[in-house]
Length: 597
Ligand code: ATP
Ligand code: MG
Image (cartoon, rainbow, N blue to C red; front, side, top):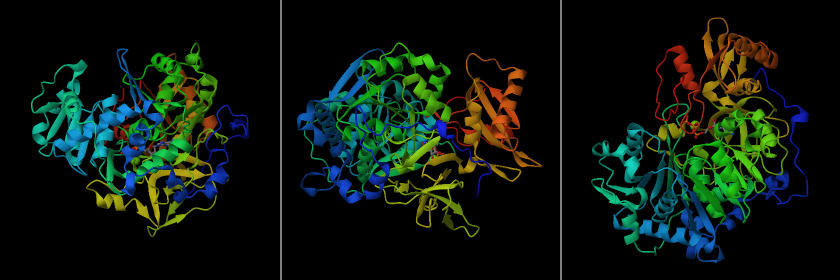
């Protein structure tokens, strides 16, 4: 398979990084050398392991090993409430509170491998529950708090949820489905502002915690014991439940070190909700394994609030998503003017392709480029990244993490796969299995899991190409590739080109069946606030895209819409654009955020 058009990044658009003179020297200075000398054996020494060699447990590496020493008094979590409240929790306190929650689980008879779900939003209780659950050898499964009753029921049922921790406000969504969940034995409710919980057949979370003991001997979990269950975002279909094990903590630590560049004094803010894998791997675990401070903001996106947080909390590393960056871009380059963001030294993004325009915009708005990185629920941690000391090619996801072997595969007619050795050929992005945070199952779907592997590779379902210098470029989801008049077109390059037009805030591109060409490219675009949808603008957009992409790749049709349908984690749902365009069934919409208008 080869793409007809591979946009080459112009040399002048490369963002060169200094070779020396850093205020904070990046952990990864020489990519090639670190990559070629990497050894899992050596890196494993960064973990402490359970006392007496009893095994490995994520919670031990995240809090307990810091709690007793000098780091115990460090602030682990700084929680910022919606209404202006704040709460600081030190490592020692987080260790104690999570011990208490582990004791609560034990007293309820919840054991190893049993699933503890949360539906609680961005609260420090998420951390307490996650760590307590892991200490107890049980499995943590966070749900996105904006889910309606049906997606909640479906995930609890599929994940065999035994315990659910939720809030008084969110309990309302659970009350009506409890009868349908015989496996769900215990519901603990976090009361609003200390008010007692009155939900029937439920326990008050705070009372239970208050009554529990401070001391807990962490269950001796082994590397391969299941620790986390994460449902995928549902961008391409019915969400899958990806199971992860305690060994994953090494990857959480290492990616924090190499890709996010954690240093002991850092204040880190991951804006993702704990209901998605990013919110757990990086919102909870990775920063704690480094003993640094994590900021948690309870509120929803608001540009002014976000900049105030960056300023007031002196955030040094900010990990966010293209959807947030696009919303900030809509507000213009001056969006951060007037805030003192001198503490900020590194910005990273994940979840969707980051258009070159956005990478460069970061430099104009913050004086820092935005570092794209790529991974999936299945990989458990960052796999491909733009590292602080590596030159950026805007639009590229970067290079594989040390220890990670990536490749581009082509599928042969026989069904076998073959690695592509030439540069810039589009194929399926694949990874050599064996990294510690690789998913170990799709829960209850062994066949689907088995189908992800071929020829000694894990196939990611994404299409990409690798250039001659080893940078990876995202092309699209394998399902989203457009075949038009013999050309293979990745939606991302068309969307990126449209994003360069001054009127375009976001774009989603699909293939539309066509009797002559097979498929033609159709684009949906949402405009920036200051632009009106006129026929003239539409013509201008078509002309702009043609000039930028050439007639073979440019969209044949452009439809201006008020907004694009997105998953709740912010990803554009191209499958839904397509289904609606073609009048086909819309499929699973449990993660849909905003309807197409
Ligand atoms: P589902 O598997 O249920 O369809 P999903 O794939 O969106 O949903 P996630 O695991 O949350 O669920 O997302 C991972 C996917 O997001 C990747 O496979 C890729 O398609 C996309 N993605 C993540 N980061 C990037 C990135 N930096 N560039 C391009 N795409 C990205
Ligand atoms: Mg996926």
